[in-house]
Image (cartoon, rainbow, N blue to C red):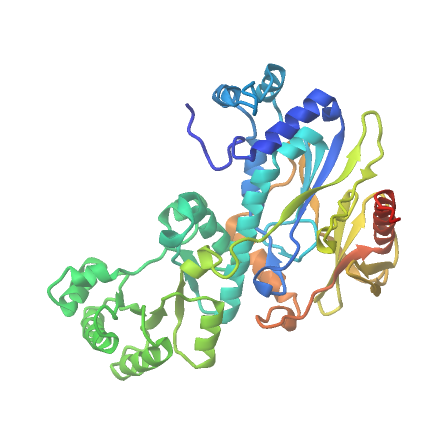
Length: 492
């Protein structure tokens, strides 16, 4: 059996395969479909998200296909009555499967918001359907972690964030993907050496409490570490008593400096980090080790970092682990992938489709969509407008809030704007050269700088305007009204 990977075609929900068979057997596989991926609410009750996972998603789509061992396994699956779940004709269709869809996507590292497309897939309906689950898996998780990372970086106010989360991550694959996404969000380095090898992310680390405990004394352990790692010495001082550990670290640091070596600093991993870091800074400075940095870890997140900053804690490097790579306070982004249009065989016309639902917040936006971002003269992002590509417009545009149609925003023809969704694949072939990971990280940093400061605060951020171009809004309203009327229950 071939080695399975996290981007294997079999990494999908069973119903994607049974629906694909249904399309095949009913003849519906001849129609084209448009599926749009978006999320309904900004994560962490924040004001923005950072789109991530585009490159892994492209790699997945480029390598999508079924092997003979996959078909052999599917052949063993049974329906409720004991008959084969899949017919042989369909299994042979899967064996010869080629992904030939068009895919548009936002640039990885872009600032994005709730209820606007991140990726759009157009092509034969069964193909669009089969890639749904894994696209959501990649984009949901990566975007969530990149956003959490960006929030921690904002809280650190320019100090480096080190991602220390592999041991607490959701499995090996989740750990590697989290390291990649954390770097996109702005982390300076990771402790995950596999992520460093795979993606070229800088790696960093200190030592564990077990190193100290393996020696007869704390001072002996520090001295041994300085001898064996003289170019990378950050001493963990709180195995027994943090301030006593600082005093012993100072002695080792002074000996290193006397030998012409560099003492990088100390790490505190427990206790009152504000108090201990202030005392440690005073002690280091009085000893003449003002160049030694204070590293801090211990269940940090953006809120704890902000609090320590507000208290004047002289921490210069932050090790963030569990609460970053697990997105501790929000375990899922909640992104969805919805059918928004179909095109019948022989037709050039996309017919909009809408899901009305019993819940207003689950109602979808119909049609093949684009997203236009408007930027004011100061360079600040001022609104994202979703529009139908079949209803192109020139000059000024009116954007309607889909939650409240009385709230509208007008953009003049002179207002600067740019398209967020751009081609990623044409007929299953990549058409865009993707940037390097450092370039993606730089793009994310640049994007955040164009948000108003009220939109990046953690508590009750100002809502960024995202809406529908007026003709799209009107079309959506008409489709909803038609669907409601068609399904209305008569009351006698």
